[in-house]
Length: 204
Length: 338
Image: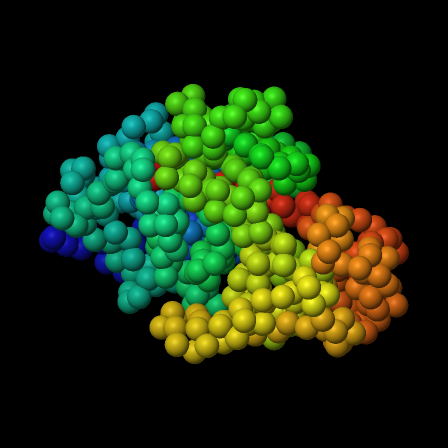
């Protein structure tokens, strides 16, 4: 597996400052605007964007968090259950323009799930999308309004966003080529007749 | 453990079936509690529905009478957008002598991803799991286990006795017919697992044998290499109710079945009530803010006094409501690796 850095901490910071200006410019101000970070790395990114906007507009935008686990369409395909971190939207959606914030835009399925999850909470005036990295390979008709960096990738590659709030060390974005043995294999074989005791045992 | 730091990104080793809570890791318990919180906020919305189990079929097969558990599972599965099939044993081929294995195979052949099973024989879900390709959820088997009840009791208690240490060091009394109770057995695992000190209390004939379990648990934990074993709360057994209730933080009352008297385990129901019914007067021995639980169905006046059921200390109604959220959490975890 080879890893290559495509964004340094400074580049991440500059991209976020630029996006923070773009969000306000596109909306024509900060009135009726709120940010929604997608769990997990979209959450610290949303907070940083709110910080940046506060620095140049002197207004603190409301920030919510969105957990899309229960809206994913690939839950059954993944062998491991994700840890749920929770949704918190401390505002009425009806009168707001919401900007969904995520780290990487890839197939578009996460964003589709995020929009579904949002709509369960109300009917926002408009929904926009800001991502730190757009790596292409969309499977749905979805596009980001604000992009930190466009990165052409192949499907065999993995983009890892490291943020100091979540990961160890400093901010960076790396691109890795996943070798076959490193890929998580999905076990789609039906396990009929597997011993009940084995299947029932709790991992510790 | 989540208290120790950041939770993991994904859960290691979530089993295919939910058959028991014995041996369930604290990481898994924490995830169920966290998901139940999410589900509770979903249930509070005007349209309480998630797409999580869209296109999945959940079959509910109960060989024993039940209202709340059965309806609770049905509401939970529907709130996750599953297709729900209810099988009433009284109107099924079971009355023609079809075996459990054949019934389970038939349900699988008809197409079902999750089978929620209640059976009067301990271990029946383990047998069913050997003949079913999907996920089995044990909704109560004989005297053995009632995992979803224990987890909803834990969830309810944590909401009220929460605070900093959670249930650690809390005194929780389980009162009544311990011997025949799958609820008591499962609750011992989850409550001591949360660090609570559990007291089992009832007439000597209905707590027989549990002293040995309490002793084995102490010995077993001392020898166990499992990381959270040392954190497990103590288990005590007594037939002295006044002693058990002293300074208790919670009392869980169990239903007393009339058949127990016929079996010669009790002199009379009146005698039982006189000595073991949870009354307002007895509850005064407990902590002033002690809460009361009952898994239902209740025999008011036999094991619990009506004034206790309706008092503001009673969480019995809340247990039922929390049951839906906890079962949604568990069903959402059953959706992977199908």
